[in-house]
Amino acid sequence: MYFLTAPQVGIPAIQTTAGLGASWVSAIDLLNLLALLLMLAAEVLALVLGLWLMFRTTQTAGELG
Image 1 (spheres, rainbow, N blue to C red):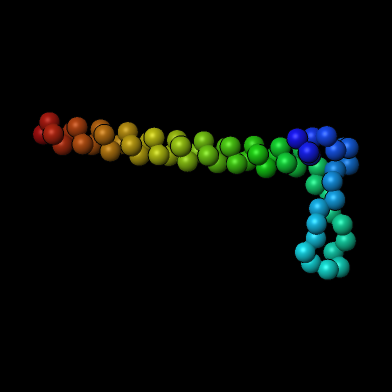
Image 2 (cartoon, one colour):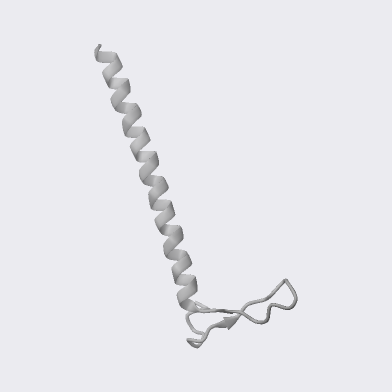
């Protein structure tokens, strides 16, 4: 919520290295990162579900034969 209440130019980020100048983090940067993390979580969930389904179908096929 802190980033969304900031002006559109953004919020100055703390720099740990010297000589690079100030950089700005805006609300859209934060939302972009959140969207990327949610997409990655969905891809991992789809991979786990697919592997589980493959395990279940191969286990059932082995019992029939």
